[in-house]
Image (cartoon, rainbow, N blue to C red; front, side):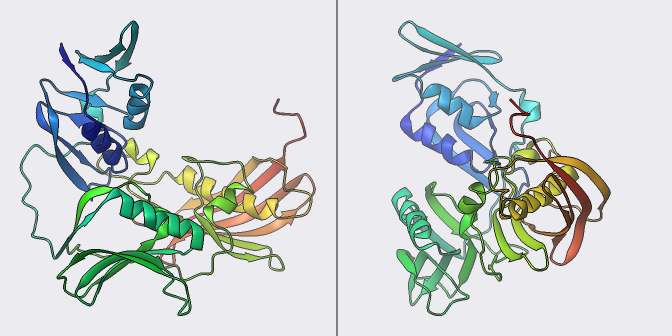
Length: 356
């Protein structure tokens, strides 16, 4: 049994890796590697510790939370489990079967040389995230500006928009990459490189934002990881219509098992995303703001296209019936104008106290 104390740097690496893949398969040696469920992102880092045996952590965040319960934890790595201890306190933590974890291949992968390379410290990404929250700008932008590389936030659809940028490098050829600000967290990276992907998908927000994710949480009770609507971009009370967006990323919790090596968004969750969008519409109606809607029926449901990491799911619902206790809406989920799922959804307002 190996006994060690994980360094602050190793803990930070594991925390960063959890944003790529919630699980990790650690092998003997001084390196930790991870790969996203969609196998589109891979990372490798050298650590101070040298691991003597292989083990797998199914939920990195849960493991790190367990460590945080101790001031100076000592970790004893045994077969199938770890013992975390400090003084008279002891906790047993069960490892996962390495075969169930999506992990990078053992063979060495020769990466192409970077077109652009720069360092992205924690404090810079934290500053950008704070500006996004304060100014409510929709995009994170990495671009060359003169002979400098900058990362910042702006609104490319509004020429008079506020903006913010920080220099992070220099000597770059002309480039511009924009991503939805809702998809970028404030976790830092030790360094970043941009490679020429087969298909660069710039996610520009072409619709006006009616409700942000934070505002959606004020209207419906769903929370991460089960909140499946990122924003509302259309709301037409006269037409009884609402449109939401869900950016499907490679780190979605359901891709861990559906399916390893072939990530596909479950059809039932596409219907759930449509239902949550309908829930936002219902919550905006007078007298419904504090009510809880439950599924009553799901009819005429068809799945016509798979939804995978990188897809932007457009969630459109038109209400067909709206009463004080019941309602019905027809939803269509689509990707790039192609229908992925359609369903006729009925809901029932739960009577007060019925769920207690």
